[in-house]
Length: 322
Image (cartoon, rainbow, N blue to C red; front, side, top):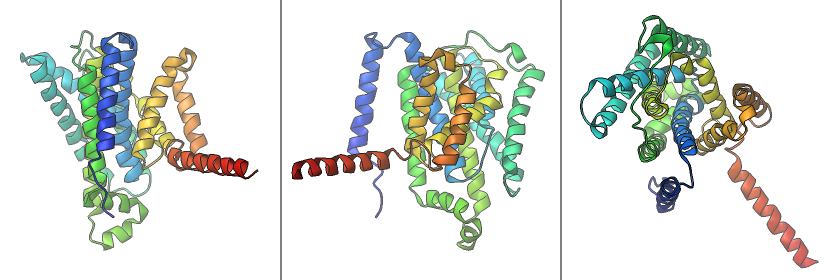
């Protein structure tokens, strides 16, 4: 049975969520501090869902996501800094340039990387992430290790929310198309996929590049949200955090990635003592989930709710019989 892409329930839920959050920000129920955290949470949703496309659905373990995000951040700053157009013209252009530059680099990296068998892609992408960071420092791009200050604050709630929803919709639409079915088939049995005339190299290349495109856009949004960046903010530990969110949320689960990104982004801000220890907490959670809940902690929420509802109904029926 073919899935319907458009759902009125989801549409009205998204619109209602936007109206409620925007009203809360406008009337001061959510202060500027938490409004900023809300934007960072939405940006992390983009990063985690897009990383899940490569890691969860395609089975390509990558640790270069924060590196592509760094490229997007610096590219978007360059565009907004040197163009004299107004923000609502130059910022969309900056985000597109950020995504395209990240995608171009990912494309050339993935041409040799995707030909390597096994999990060597992890080592390659980790090295790429550190090369990008060190090139920014040593080539003194954007003041090198000192970073940049006073970046224009263009990433308001509406822009970040709309872009997040659009990217999730694009990924969902892709996965429910014939191309998405091919992507899902590849990690199951690559030889069988090849025998069905699926060009596995092409799909790996395209998915990895598209993932980097979304990471570049997220980097542009991030830079124009916090207005202060430096290269060390995009080191491999950030990529590990994102990977942990993907695994905890559930490999191959868009809903799990969204819930995981929300919970694990907000949690350190609620408990200040956990902020500096978040990478340890995330990785410990990732190990626990891989050992005891390989399908992910949040991807099984539907099964949990269904079992809980059935249990409550059975208990109610038993009480009525008594």
